Image 1 (cartoon, rainbow, N blue to C red):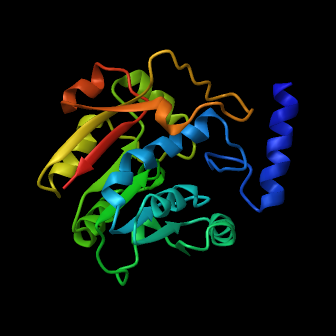
Image 2 (image 1 turned 45 degrees about the vertical axis):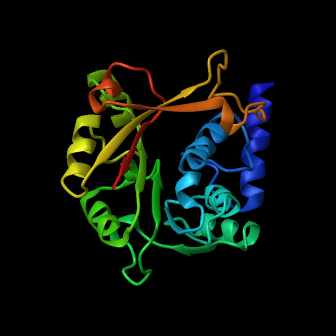
Length: 235
């Protein structure tokens, strides 16, 4: 049953004009993994209300749309994959999408009340240019979600993923952010007690973003407390 569903999901992505391989999460496959990714946008949503938002690595655009519906006055989504940009423009006309490389962010976009980079920085060859430009473009918080690499085992697991090029321990992420921003808060990301997501399940999820919780922790606690994502809010 799962194999058949994965085949159908593959075909569905292709027909929608999306990349069927890699880590391209989209509403075409609204499984537990999709909902977990969407929950990060739900976490960031309070910072978006009434403001101007930049979503770096917006993918298929569903998160940008979530922030727009959460009350953002304007949302701009940037993604490197032209197929993602075409899909997002077709499905979410209230958001401005454009193709852009996060390592070479456009300098003519102005400033933003919220900048979000969820599960994208690890895909870059060099994160420094992106972080520096984000610092220059923000007048509010910068929300960043990256893999929680806390030891050699999790480092090896991420290095084995061909799409992950900037694999840094959480301490290194904190250090890079603190060099550029005044304060950095760390959060753990985990399912609500009693909820057991299956990120390999290809079937539509019964979960909602509210089934995932966020807890502010001391940065060093990301190494000792289980978390799906290493999440930082830099100001």
